[in-house]
Image (cartoon, rainbow, N blue to C red; front, side, top):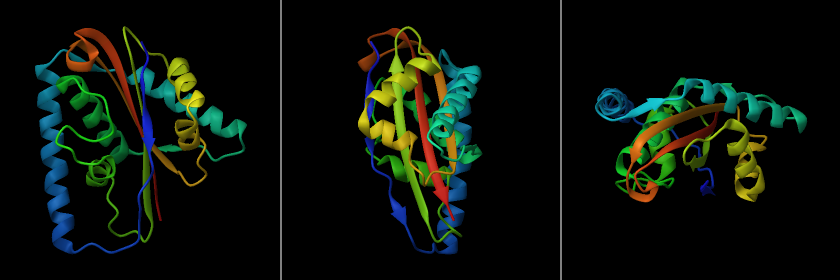
Length: 190
């Protein structure tokens, strides 16, 4: 089984944030980082760093083949993707919105802030498979889906965050199986 989730279109923002919002976001990011560390150590979840690197390479090879700029890894987008992959595995759901209903771009914004930038936009691709998921199979799934392919080949993106995690056993929609979940977050700020 290798489901993918439909792309949610990116949100474009052009506005300034009040200083107190920046402070609140910083506190939220710090809290989320500590919570993520606790979640990862308390469950049978583990990061698949080699898979992250292979997905990044595959995305950039696809983009190069289409004359597009390579995407640079972003620590903020990586943290957003990791938090989401872990949450989906821990809570047994699959979707762009967070478990509490927060839309994907708000989650990403807490890790990849818009403040200080006149333009900000993000997008996301998801995939999971049981018992494993390779970079090549994730790319095939995304390329076969017009919205996911559009995300991979969007000229606007400049940065990317990728988090592949293995979850054993994964409940909910994963049916207690061993699964690999990949969240790929795309972004641009200028």
